[in-house]
Amino acid sequence: SQKIEQNSEALNIQEGKTATLTCNYTNYSPAYLQWYRQDPGRGPVFLLLIRENEKEKRKERLKVTFDTTLKQSLFHITASQPADSATYLCALDRGFNKFYFGSGTKLNVKP
Amino acid sequence: GAGVSQTPSNKVTEKGKYVELRCDPISGHTALYWYRQSLGQGPEFLIYFQGTGAADDSGLPNDRFFAVRPEGSVSTLKIQRTERGDSAVYLCASSYTSGTVNTGELFFGEGSRLTVL
Image 1: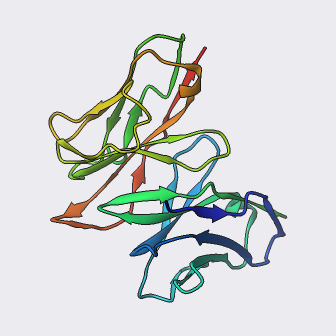
Image 2: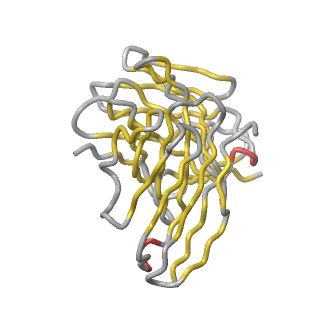
């Protein structure tokens, strides 16, 4: 079965730096991969989607890469701000409109 | 409403009781999902509806769990004979599909936190 791995340890960075979060998966490569943000006590909020034939996707200060050879996606937040502190989840398309989530990585941006 | 609405936001029940959790998706979204999230974990897939039918219920942990979506809009997740291990946040999400194409973006509600004592 598909396994999705995100660093369970929190990532602590200084305001203004670039945060890089990793999502690794095993077995088959999904048709697309998504990243979500989740704040405590709230539901996940969609950020970005990247398809298997796309190497990179950008949205304002966010950038996602997708390497199907390495079976890895990287999620970058440039010029990070304390308001970016949250848990970030990656989700893989499992086919037939099903999506599986990683356990998420908590990002702490310190002022 | 503008977003996915879930009720109740919190539910405390006793072991062995029956509970119902309700989800009102975004209008026009034909796909509806139920996920379960335990502390420190990512959302775990339970069931997916396309319209009124359950297209995939492979994530339901056992036959105590059941979900319906009779008119293709509101959905209810039903849990019989609740156990302490059922305690979690139950998340509902909806998305737009056109034919067999899913735009991919899931819109989540705020969840229903279930505590079984």
